[in-house]
Amino acid sequence: MHQPIRHLMPVAIFLVLTTCLTVASPPALHAKAYHPPAREMIQKAEYIALVSLEDPVPIENKGNGSWTYAEVTDAKLKKSLKGTLPAKFKIYGKENFICARCHFPKGESLVFLRKDHDLFVGQAWEISCLPVKAGKASWFSSLDRISPDTETSVDECVRQIRKELKQ
Image 1 (cartoon, helix red, strand yellow):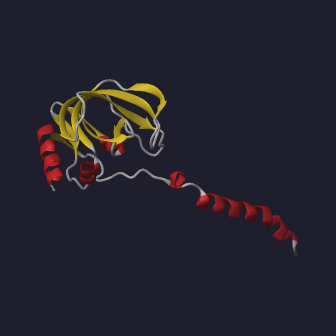
Image 2 (cartoon, rainbow, N blue to C red):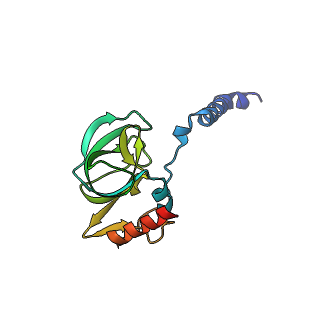
């Protein structure tokens, strides 16, 4: 009668240990990427700008702040909407966070940035860099959305950003 219980002990020990390790593990292991609505991204970005980006270049994981970065892109400032950026600067992306990463591909883009110590990095994962093609940017039909769903003229995007910053 005691034989079946003895047989289940290793399974029970495994389940208890697994549960304890999962609950006690660092929060970063449980982390999921938070994707803010556009309105929040605009408010929380330290820098918002229209920029011209060169091809991203792979780098050895660089970073001394929240993340390490595996890609850097040279940027030329075309128009600053929030914060003071130099005429030329580097944007770091391709974070070591598996759930979400920032990518800054070649071309004209509307970017939402923050500083990670001394590095310019994306504010809101994938939506930190909104490509501009033929004067239109990937944009949000509502600033309460978390992903772009329309193409909007850059002038209209700038107008909405400035209006949101005044509130």
